[in-house]
Length: 210
Image 1 (spheres, rainbow, N blue to C red):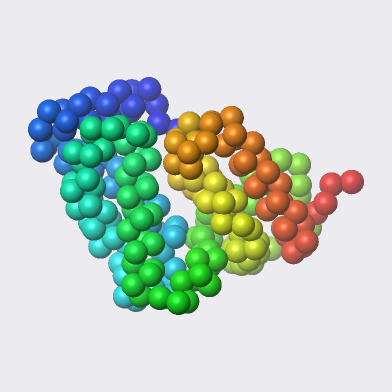
Image 2 (image 1 turned 90 degrees about the vertical axis):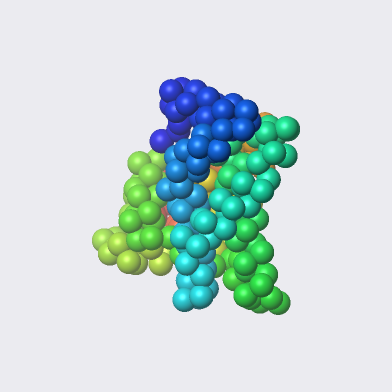
């Protein structure tokens, strides 16, 4: 669900108070977006790294980095606060992958492991768009097909699908995150969804339309 006008106004109020030096306001901002940060990180944390890296630890590291960079952000305000926090979290994850994986990082970057429920919900959205399942599949089978299809997509397509379907970012926020206009973000998302749908048809998860 996209942020409501009330949520946005409250965020702006807290950002302004933080800019005036109110440490408590910044702590409230972090608390407000902590569940979102955890979601962003959990979606991208490779399962093979989870024995060594806990999502909660990455959230804390992201918050510390955000505190260090707060003055710079407040002086420029280059993007919405939530998008800036997301960018900080993704940068932190990239550094952790580089440290723990090294040369194997490129292959790990293509690994996608969505929760079974998330994969099922995305499949339902595709069904609602006109496609239908070719056979009865378990949620685990749907998750496998979805993860394999996502891994075949270009990174830009995977990211915009994650941002829109699992992070609930608006097209304005997506545009700010990838530095394009909201209308272009909408078009890019539509193209990515079509590519995913075609891959799922090839895998047998969806039936092609006559």
